[in-house]
Image 1 (cartoon, one colour):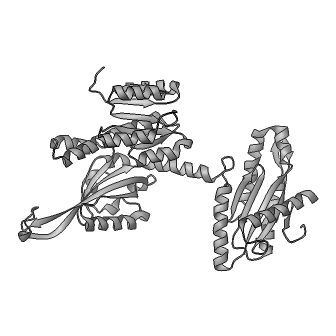
Image 2 (cartoon, helix red, strand yellow):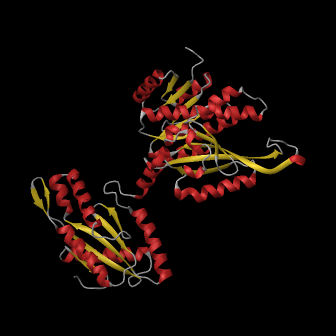
Image 3 (cartoon, rainbow, N blue to C red):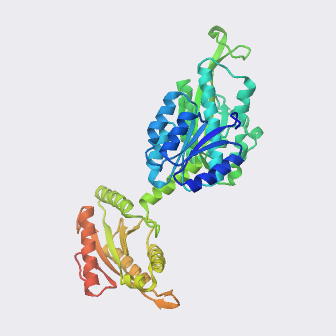
Length: 450
């Protein structure tokens, strides 16, 4: 086997997926070793040196964090990309924090993996070159230029006015700009408007701190705004210099003009990672079936509502809602149809509400509703009537018209309680009173059934 080829060690607990992945990588001219267990992985690690490791966090008995630390300490220039599902997310993020190149969430497309592998390998070469420079070993300039030009990251230089003096060709594929049209332009040309202030502050901060490296997450605009902005992790270093009277760089301060600054930066595209983070965050705060906020997010907003009401001497309402006889739908038509009905009822309820209101799925066919900044009880009553009317409209299931109703309990802050627990409890009690008496209606915690 040709040892000059890039050598990869790929791991996955599912051997069938591992074989498919191996075949894809072999077609891309990599030398590939595979491991689906800790024993195989450790044996290969002791026997060979690898350019990149694809580390599956779901394989038992592999301490991913210790492994990343050991490679950082060993100065082996091996790139690591960790993979896993949502359950491995926290460990995956920690591997990146400790030095892994990236964390890839399963399932992933082959094209995404191939691009990520190439970026990780490029980054590993960059690290090796940086260490060579710091050790006083300077590589041939044409090799360095080739590496910069073919980097998977956008690399650029700015003068002390913030104008581009150099940018590599990666900007063309990621953002659609021609390099020639950016040279001489201010960096604000590509920065998303909402991020400009942070970018300006950091650039000036770099100028003051000389060689101190900086890191910042920014959004870059696609040319002519044809696509959404992309997220980049921008690492930059500013290098001060002086000019002699002829305008050349010099260290002779006697003949030097005032100091200027060149800023060098590497911008790594992290849009895919941000997308994954948003998905994970949404899964943690929203109900997977209806897309509504879940208990966790509802309680967070409840806390904010109490703080705001205390500060501004306001009133807000809490409702507890339960669909009447929903179990019948599940029993007759099955849970798949029942899930569709729940989604439909959620949509109906949302259409009755303001943007500032929070409707959450509490579990099963139970929902909670937070109505901040209510002026009077009539306003709350109007919402309750809209909800009962919306839910009671018929719908078709299996060619037959069906109908549901809803029982609603209502508690008012601060009249019925000043804590989340007391208000939800009072609303829940009022809802059960409606359900026990007649269903299909609403009741205030301290008022008769309407």
